[in-house]
Each structure stands twice: as C-alpha cells, then as structure tokens.
Image: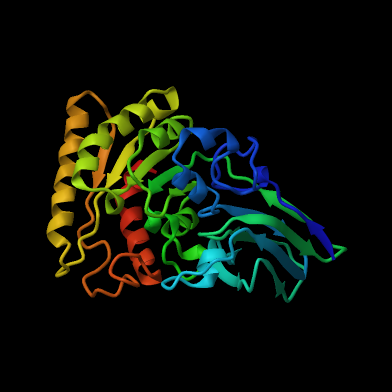
Length: 329
C-alpha cells in the first residue's frame, strides 16, 4: 500500500485553509487564538463539519488517524465523538458507506471494494475531537486525487447541537446532511456550551466570502445575552464587504412541548424576533429569522436527553432547514 497525508488545503468546509494551524484540521487558524475566549478556541480545535473528498480506483482503502483527546461522553457515541464517516457518490447522490470506529488515540479502518472502478468518496472528520495525523492508504498500483469545492460556503455559528451533539456518527450532523444536499460547503462553527452570539466570532465571519450565515445560538444564551449581544454581532459581520454581501439568518430555538422550559424558550424566541426587527430598523438589510415550529416533530423522539439531537432529530432538523433556506440557495 501507499499512503497519502491530506493537508489543510485538501479539506472542505474549513476557514482559510492556507493559514498556519497547530493541528491540520482545527477549525480556526492560529492567528485567531488571541482574539476569542479560551473555551471557544479549545473547541475550535475539534474537527466538526470538516470533510475530505477524493477519487480513487483502489480496491482497498485504509484509514489511519490519531486523535488528541480520546475522551468519552455518556450521551454520545465514540463514533460520533472521534470516529470517521465515509460516504460514496452513487447515482448522483451521497450514500453512506462505512464508519471508522475508534478504539484509542491511534486508530485504523479498512474498506474493501469489489472492483477497481473510480469511486468518489467523502470522509467526515470527528465532531468532538481533533485529528493530529491522518493517512489514507490505497493499493500501490492505484491513484488518488483530492477534490475541492469552490462554491461559496454556508456558514453555521451555534452551540453543541450545531457542533453535532449527539449524532451517532459524523455524517449525521445536520451541517453535513445539508452539505450533501446542496452544492455548497457547510462550515461548522458550533461550540458546545459556548454559542454566545459574540461579536469576536462575528469579526471572523466577516472575513468569509459566504453564501449566507446561519446563527443558531439560542440554547446557549439567556434573554439578557440576546438583548446585549445580537446587534453588536450583526454590526461586526456587516463591517466588511464580505459580511455586507450575504444574508444573516437567525434560528429560533425549538420548543420541546410539555417540558418545563417551554415558557423560557418561547420568551427567548420572542426577544430574538424583536432584536431582528430592531436590526432592520437600524438599517441592516437581509436579516432573516427561521421559525422552528414543528422542526423536530411532535413525538418527542428527536433527542437523546431532551436537548441534544439524535439521528432522527438531525434528519428532521436538516429537512426543516433545507426547506427554510431554499430561497437563499
């Protein structure tokens, strides 16, 4: 076998791939470390939403990856936290192929194909860990080519749910589902417990030549933070030509009917709507709001714990989001 080591610039769904990074697939380049909170920076080292697309005619594909943290959570699978997900493009659509299940810091996964025809594959990286090294092995007489996507990205900024908690495997996070359903890369800036509508993140967003921004932070903020942070966030995004050129779409928090937090969520959604209208009155254009009524269904089967989505929840949420953003695509 011969091995290829993908670099940052070979990845999709990543900000400024040519900038220096400590780890190849951390979501922010090193230059932003001093401008954001430590909690956000540490989470930005996780590889949520990042993918690698490639073509190969190899009969065998071997993946070797080392992760930084190798930790566990009691409400999310190891595969989702630190595994790899592989999809294949078949009949003009992406189809699940295999999952590289992690066992420790150092991991391997072998896929055997039935033929030597050219295959187009997508490799989704871990949602809650950081890959230190990644090697892709193919048969010695085969070829491999990495694929890039030059379409403008959809950029998501949000919470643990945006980061992918608690998908059973990386490909089931809604940003990855949406990326498979459109021609646009989806940049995942979900930070578990730390989606605080911060203007410092807005300043980074303003540097991205995006198709549009989706801001989905309500589960991590209270009413006072919505009141104080939302307008400065919009101002920080809009201060650049890139930030002025595309829509900003805010997302309501879904209401889990009959749960004790219903009244709180309803009030937060009301304040969000009010602040969006205030931004429009201040002269900011192309500011939008997505209603979340029914986005997770009404059977209470969409989460692992009443908050974080399971695969059913992510599929339903992605379908709702795709319907809501169709006019912006």
